[in-house]
Image (cartoon, rainbow, N blue to C red; front, side, top):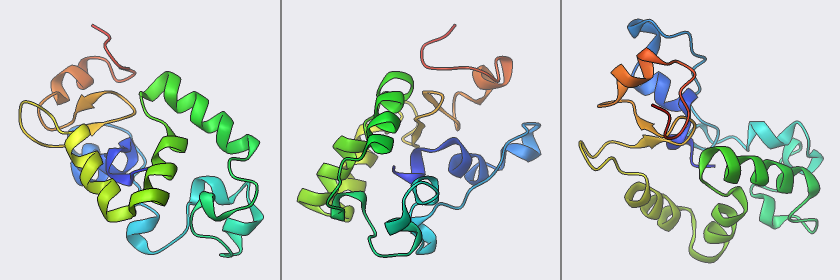
Length: 138
């Protein structure tokens, strides 16, 4: 996952706690030079640092990753599997460039949060009115 799209990462960036939101912050795994914390609790190879990316594993894509991908496709309009395949083919730097363009807010140019489907720079009032907001709700 692109850490920059995550509500935990963006919450830290926009300091949502100071704005009255109760959110856990996350500085991101790869930005800190760590392997994926979300998947490593389910994958011994990631936990031991034997692979950095899931696509380096002979079992790619595993059942756990397929389940995560299905949930993210349905709820958050993104695919972990497509992301990993893109990184595998084009590299992480190209992936981040592609993501920056795809998830750019048309109003202000900041990054849209994949978990709520809002730009936390210019849509924060909408999010404040409904803190359980999800993609396209009114």
